[in-house]
Length: 315
Length: 315
Image (cartoon, rainbow over all chains, first blue to last red; front, side):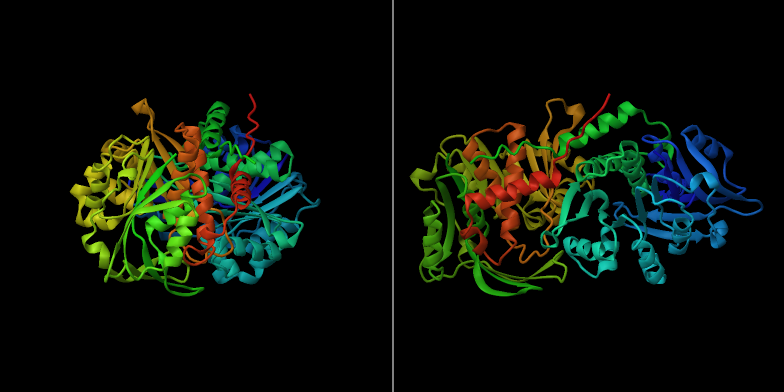
């Protein structure tokens, strides 16, 4: 089934303890689309770039079944650029520079063929842009997910809450969930965010994994909760894009199966986590260009071994 | 099968955002013994207290099958006392006061009936005291586990490494694992700690769960790894003793089953995590005095629901 995604397609400049990747390809929509492309077709990408973006990357996206009809190319302008540096232990990153460039006045226009997607993943962007995409849809999708960040909570909370009220799934990191809800406990935070709209919430905890909450019919019982760890890795080479890759794998898997049961949402979280575990193994999108179905199956099997146990309950 | 444990039996003064518990019962051996008592008998406790310790607590321990023959009572002296305050979000705690009292010159003496235990859990204490306990054993136990803390790494690293070299399981928190190994990656940290002796390492990550590492026969493949989350709770009332309760549940479950396969070690980690999730629900040992087998089964079942999934791998 079709998956529509909107988000940045950009250049990143990344410094980690392992090295410095200068002006490499990045962007939320790039990671989302590539990760999803391993599961479902078509993946319809809505974004904007300048005329400085490498044709090679566009060809790689097309080769993976990503439909770029919704990708605007602004002649004489530059693509979005972000530079950041990770701390020694990778737990913290500082933004060194952000150049909005083409993103400053981005008005997403959905081509006719993009207006009836089955699944929608709104990558992290101005809430107003996310809303513009939803407003152009001519049919209610089966599932709409969105990502966001603390910056929009600080600067555009009203618009952000309007978008959140219209989506089925919110993906957000733990600190952002706390900021959005005003609750330290993630269980309580999820309850408050359910009240804002989304029936499903994925709280991403980076190296500590991800929690999936689904609204419970019986409010007394809170949410259904599922936890997926991050794969313990000897080296995390570059965490950039891991959250977007998770979202792409999660939504791509759901779109490919068409099954929105909680059991299948759990599997989607595992597939998303597996894709994210590949993303961090190399700089930029490099690892996401070369995966095989066999590698993905093998990686998911490692998650099974990592967490599944036989409770052998007695009595 | 029998489980011998050594550790503090003490008073705690605990301030959390939920309240202030003044001079309540605490101590590593207290938590370990109570948690283990739900799984195996006898639990043999080695520790020291002053004549200020409540007879009621000793009666509660005895009622739960804990053998106190190895508990020294020093007339005219005071029990170990620790005071601490947790931060607003419970992620950090400051020690306000530590009074060693009877612990200052504690010389553990194992009664004759304590010298041939099947399982041993060395609670966090001076490495020299942990060693003294091992030296008095007259038969090699099936499994020896130990807990420790950063304080001993700072002040008694040589003795600490001697004890670590003699145990099968080291339980340690993530920051301590990093300090002990000099590695930030927990996967690499575990490899280095395996080299120090223990075939099994449990790295406790508090609200982020616990990782079990088992040395792999084939060194190229690193360790077998299992991950157990902490149960997401709306309120963590008081985290004091959670790590010791984990260790007690873990070792108690192993002692009750007598099965040291990796599959059973995984279950033991889950049982330990379940017991720890009870511990934090009330101040002091209160919750650990009132559990039923049914509650423990129900709690373990929540872990099953939280992490188990059907991968439904194709191809």
